[in-house]
Structure formats: C-alpha cells, structure tokens
Image (cartoon, rainbow, N blue to C red; front, side):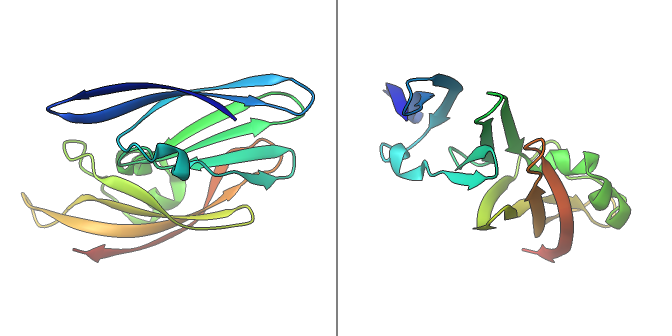
Length: 163
C-alpha cells in the first residue's frame, strides 16, 4: 500500500488527505482514491481482509464507515460509505420501519465486528417519535459482502435502542 499524505491544520482541526494506491507484488497498481482522516495516526486504521477475489479495506476516517473493495482479477473498485440517512433506501429497513433517519442530523456509523464476509455496523441517528419530536437511537445492521460482485447486502436490521 502506497499512501501519499497532505496535511492541513487550522483552528477547525487537523486534516490528513490521503491518496491510496495498492501495488501488487508483480508491480500492478490500483488507485483506491483519497479520503480525509482527522488523526495523525490514520495509518493504524487501514486494515485489509480477503473475501474470495476481493481485497476489502474497512475504514473509519470520520463519522461514517467506508468500505473500499478491490477485485484482484478484474480491477473493479467498489467504494461504499455507510451513512444513517441511506438506511431509508434499504428494503429490510423499510419493511421494519415506516420512517427514515433525519437528514438534518448526520449521525454516525461504526464497525462493531467483521467476521469472514459478515460485517456488523452500529448506526446512531435521530428517528421520528411523537410529532414533532425526534429521538436519538442506535441500531445494529448486519451486512454480507457478496463475493461475486463485492457489494454489501443487508442480512439483518436490528431493533432501535433509545439513547
């Protein structure tokens, strides 16, 4: 992994813009794109997993989990960010809840567990309560990495826990 870091610090905080390139043993290079971290120890957060022909990079640069998945045969790169507001598009979520996370409060997502191709993510977001109120909730969602296309498929949407 080749990482090129550009540091920018000001009163708002520290920003590490990191361009990532994966170079294989035979010299082939794959551009994984860039992301911004807010800690000088950003490199400790870069890990890899293998799921069949995919190299999976689970990342937590800011408030949201991001997965970069590279197919080592075709060179296809999937880049997925898991944000609470996007739960509204998930079919299992829509079957269980008839509202959607508040778009005015960004919330957060974090990795709880990764085992093989199964990933458990914890979301925190505001959900509608008795009108016009909203409540802060946390919720776990389990995903499976599809080894054929490298995309995440929702396996289970957990219950909401009021914060």
